Image (cartoon, rainbow, N blue to C red; front, side, top):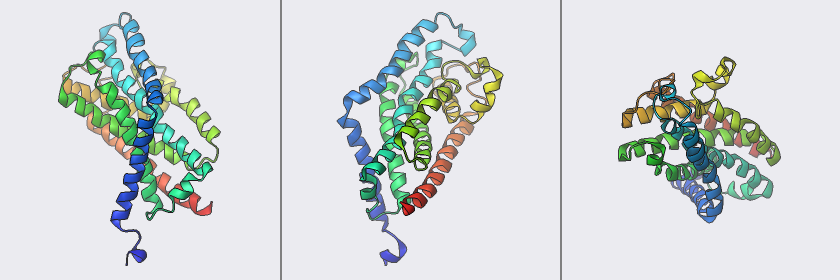
Length: 272
């Protein structure tokens, strides 16, 4: 009966578990790479945060600049590992690893969800390392605050991973995907309000910020800090949308990207 109705739920869950476990094994097998990915956010926190904190007035960011910068540093810590899932998807397809994965007794949509979930967990785990450094970012060491930041960061990682994979399934060359990331990662990060309030940016960048998922992620992190740590609002009022709206926008972005990616993945792999 299961052959007529598709793979059994147990097989689907085992496939997802195996893909998540594979991403975690990649993470633990390359501690040097993880350390290098953590280096840039830490440099931004301690050098940029320490240097500009004496130049940026508190009223411009609604508090100390280092506290304002900390959510942006958290986003930096997950941006590369989350988007690199799409890069590895293309590499696996070129090397034949993906073809071997597709013979698993699970739907292709389930397999793509497992790849995204594995990337999300791996990226969130790296972000959790920086969340533990919250006092260095001028935030109080409160368990509820740390859990709230981890939840928001996991949602951000899910949205970025889903976007990366949705784009990767439509691209045939790893070099093209790498070039696309290099051209878009920095602009989206800088227009998100991670380093300076978006109100301080040129007005012609507003349309880019409006469609920038990192902007909603940054606002959600700022809103979480304001809600759970009692910090004053940032210069942008901790975002132009309420915390719940920013969270919903991130979730919706991830679900739409995952749906579109799954459709493309199923169609493209069927023709390969």
